[in-house]
Length: 239
Image (cartoon, rainbow, N blue to C red; front, top):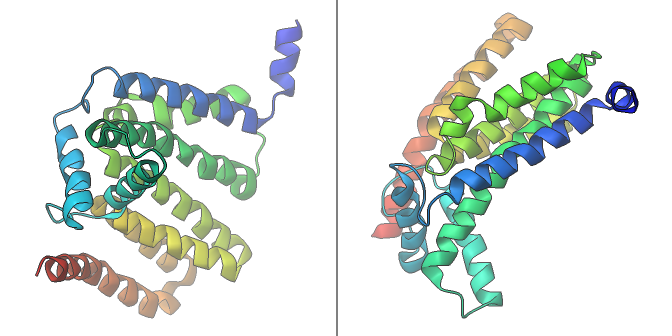
């Protein structure tokens, strides 16, 4: 009876915290199921990170954020512990970031439920939704060798939350946060960035109709220029 009573008193944030911890554990198990990076594309990310450390730029043109973030953490640890073996450190940093970063999307997902929807859903329903988002087959398939996809989805969820909050409250701060999350999504994974743009353009048209013409054109141009700019910057760094 006490267990049932506790479950009734349990707040929705506790559900998300439990699912977050469980997801981190599961992803750690998947990542450390082998000495290398699990998955067919695991070596790709390691090559990109090592190339940044050794040459200062990516080995192959790609959205750069997650590779440079891994490289930054590796360099910080090497400054503190200079005797660390660099190769093993790169792999371990990559695995830990992959295990923790993606489940962080439960934070904006919880905030959408709490601040936007504001509905007292059944706890079992919230647990099912949260679990499906991070523990179903598709998100677990992204573990390890698809880190940039996972990080892109995390930023995409944060973008959706801040943008919905902006539409609800018309706060300039939320507009800035949503724009920042959109940029970070684009710097992480181009496909997820395109999904964000589609969501953004449709939302602007639905909420603002003809007034959204100029923003829609502006975001469309930005969607074309961003990958071109990244390619140009990479070519300049290699010349």
